[in-house]
Length: 217
Picture 1: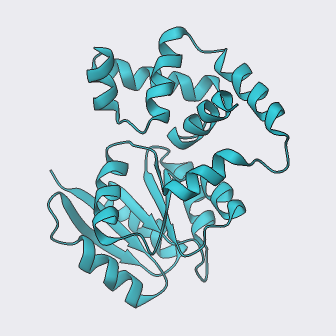
Picture 2: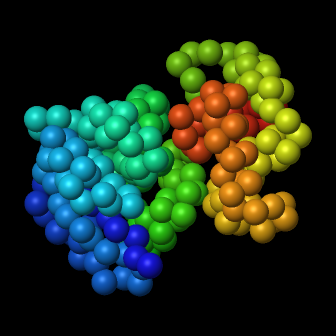
């Protein structure tokens, strides 16, 4: 079954390039395009895509605001930010808005295709460089404080939930976690939901950040 993707970017050439890269690849179907956040919200409602590739800087309504509105109506919608900007604050704002991941527009075509499939499968989706910077900083809070706070949050989890959180932080999908831990897929989904509630976290990326912070030396 194909992953149904909605492309959102104010530049026609960018959307055309993304369509050229993704369309026709095994497992991917482009179901629509939007030029701003308002159009994106309407098309998500009408088309129900599996995944939205969302630009951050757009006219009328930017990608961050559109993401917040879409997820307020459907928390399960998968949204990956695709942009030329990789400043730490931009990444944080995107993830706080609820985005599943963050990719740069200069991501190689093969990596972009793989990333779309992985994000649709529930994996944490961040470029490696973005991940390193994201884990390393949090608005000026000392590293020791961040580590202590993250460890305190993880301590609220049961041993099994902590194990599942670690697997999520390693970028594994629910199916892979189920196989590794000898659990049913439904049980893994329940554990992930409880982990999000307890930490609390809005998405898998925030679970990963918490785990990495707690493990930093």
